[in-house]
Amino acid sequence: MTVALVLAALASPTVAAEDAASLIIACQAAPANRAAFRRELEGSGARQLQRWKDEGALQAYQLLFSRRVDSRGWDAMAILTLKDAARWKKIERDFPAGLPANVLALTTAIDTVPATLVRHGGQVKESEPVFLVIPYEVMVPTAEYIAYLDDYVLPQFAGWSEEGVLASHAVYLARYPAGRPWQSLLVLEYRNDQALAARDAVVAAKWKAVSENKKNVRAEKTPVLADPAPARQIP
Image (cartoon, rainbow, N blue to C red; front, top):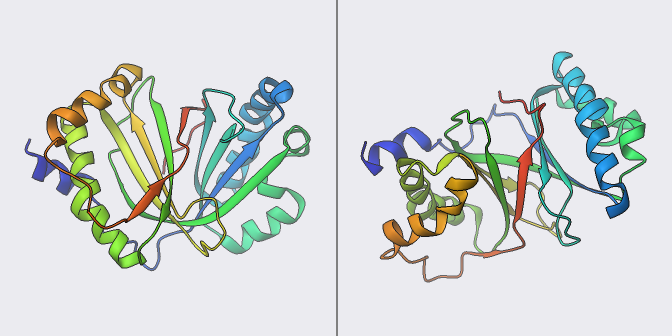
C-alpha cells in the first residue's frame, strides 16, 4: 500500500459539528501513593467510568498510566468522549472528574482540559501497545495549524503505519486554550515496545528529506511514555 493510500485511510476530516466533545484529565499522585493510586483507578475508578458509559453520559473512555515517575508529567490520564454533556455536568457535582472518593483521596492534582478531536486514525488492536503522549504549544491560528497537520504531520503517520510501527494516532486541540498546559495534544499508539524503539530509525529512513515548516508552528513540551489500563475502552 502506498503512503498516499495509507494517508487516505488514516486521515479524518475536520471535526463535524455533531462530534462529541472530549475531556483530557491528567492526574498526579504523591510518589509514595502511586502504586495504590493505580490499583484504585484501575479498579473502582475504571468501573465507575464504565458505569457512566453504560448510563449514556460517556461515549467512550481511555485510561493511560505513565511508565515513569516524573514530576513534570502526569501519573494517569483519562481521555473521555462525552455523549451527554448535561448528564456529565451533574455527575461532576458529586464525582469530580467522574472518579470515586477513594481514588480522589490518593490524588494530589487534577488538570482537566476540554478538547476537540481534530484528527485520528488507525485503531489497530494490539496485545501490548505503548503510548507516547506529546503536548504542544501552538503558535499559529487554528486553521493554519490544521493545514500544517494535514500537509506535514499526517503524511508522517501514514509512513509510520506503512512501516508497521504506528497502530493509531489522535490529535486533540484544547478548547479555551489560554493559560492551558498545552494547546495541542498528540496521542501516538505504537504496536509494542519494539515498534517504539524503531521509531527514530523509521523517521530517519523515510523522512530525512522532509523538514518542518520553516515558520514556527508549534513547540514540543515534555512527552510522557504510557501504558494502557486493562479497562481501556474504544468507541
